[in-house]
Amino acid sequence: QVQLQESGPGLVKPSETLSLTCTVSGDSISIYYWSWIRQPPGKGLEWLGYIYHSGTTRYNPSLKSRVAISVDTSKNKFSLRLNSVTAADTAVYYCARLPGAGTFFDTWGQGTLVAVSS
Amino acid sequence: SYELTQPPSVSVSPGQTASISCSGEKLGDKNVSWYRQKPGQSPLLVIYRDNKRPSGVPARFSGSNSGNTATLTISGTQALDEADYSCQAWDNSIGFFGTGTRLTVL
Image 1 (cartoon, chains in turn yellow, purple):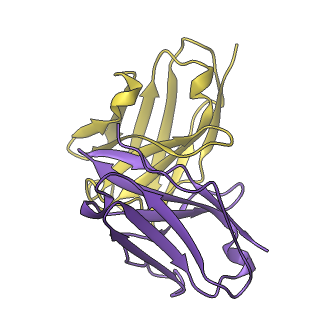
Image 2 (image 1 turned 120 degrees about the horizontal axis):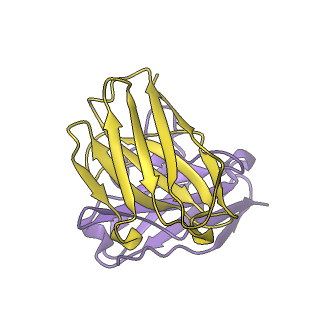
């Protein structure tokens, strides 16, 4: 059974870069699409982007090119980088699996809270 | 930007049927998925491709999608179904989630 685990700093300073990693276990990362989704406290879910093992990516244009997702197939991990963060980027960040581009999120990580504060 | 609108809250009595709507322009032309999220937990897929149930999701969960509205229906609602529910769809390869609905089982 596939499991996803997010990891990374829980606190980031304003204007700096948020970096998170999602480790995939129980399945090969070279089969599915992999995504990042976030949820500000008390608010709804926001899709950030996805990546395929080939490196093909798609991002939410609302993030205005601040976001980048990369994959390391040798370590079965994929990562999120969000630069120039502000307090509005404070959220629980989830990684999730998609069976294909534009499908659905069938497996989610437990989520990790990232606060942006000085 | 594409918008998916849900009612903020829905209440239902135990054993009754709960219906949660999700509205968006020409939503019936897209595939909709639904997620349940309990406090402190990550979302769980309960419906995909409008009306398909993942393995392990009870048969009391069903979905439909037509016109501008998708609907998640929970028949014989149980106390353990109390949670936040969000719809999701894609528009021009960009993922959008609904505003979310809190289901209360009174």
